[in-house]
Length: 465
Image (tube, rainbow, N blue to C red):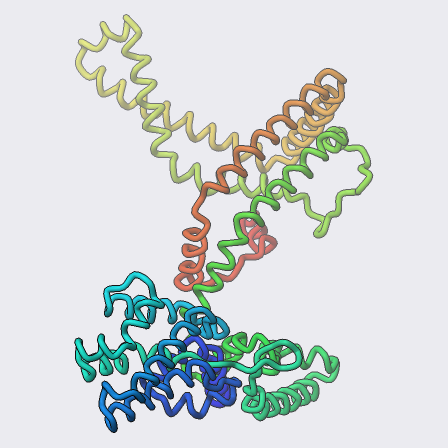
């Protein structure tokens, strides 16, 4: 079916280009014009065809009686009259080939050195001119340079609907019937596989095949043909599909991103103006209550993870550096004491100072670390810290609720968000969206997807440590 659709598309393209390319077919492959002209309602133009027949009769008469005979003179006068009528009537206009007539007139003018086309034709079809220039030479010029241009003219029939007659639908009808039967069969099969799907949705499942049934805009059939060729693995359209998707995304990514950013900032500004931040700080009931999905205070859990990681993992690793820093500071303090500078002259005092500095630094670091661990593990200390944070939040909320603080805070936050919206959206417009899309595509192709870690599984492990 992909090959059949391709053949039909080739016929459609040939039909669409036949009239514009008819001159080429007439010169190179005249057999095609003899077959396809009736399909397009094309027939020889009576005036130009009669003109060529008169010239052919002239050639026969010259071969029989010679150029100077009275019969030849009469025929030359008749052809000269037809030339004037052709210039005045312009039979090429109906076929939209007025340019061809202009080309004929220019060649005759150049041949006879005349400025007027009518005078040039009258001169060319005269016994004196043909005798002087040579009959064979001039008639060969006409047959090689003028006759092919006149032969390209045609007359195309017009139907009762006012449009040109075109019988291509008779050639296209068997293909359309075949594609229609195939679409019905595929839709029936799709509906059998998905019983809940309606008949219309089953037909729209292969929406691109509907282009094969249209009696107009037949050039749209290139869409289902390309899809079918790709599905049949006759051509590889993956690079083209990637470029089309990238171009489509690039056209909409900029506007879509700007809309999302502006809408988020507008929502934040509206929340500030409605006083939602104040109600949150004062722990009052919101118009829209906060929804907790896991009965866990995420901020408290994050703070706990951070504190335990620092205390049990980070501080033991940097303890040698802390000891070295304290030892250096203690030694600096010793050197600033005048009595110690005098005692340094005594033997053995320097080593005692070094040992003393190291012992003090180690002792201070150990005691400080033990104090921090005890504070973290002490339930009383944790309770006092919680009370401190709660009282801090209540005091902050009470102060923020004061009229002058609240109005100034809301005004500053709203202005700040407005500046962010203007500057950030402008920066989005200046970024190269196509480059961002290309980078995203490369990441999808090269970076493997990593499994996500459940935060509830990581929290007990750190607490256990």
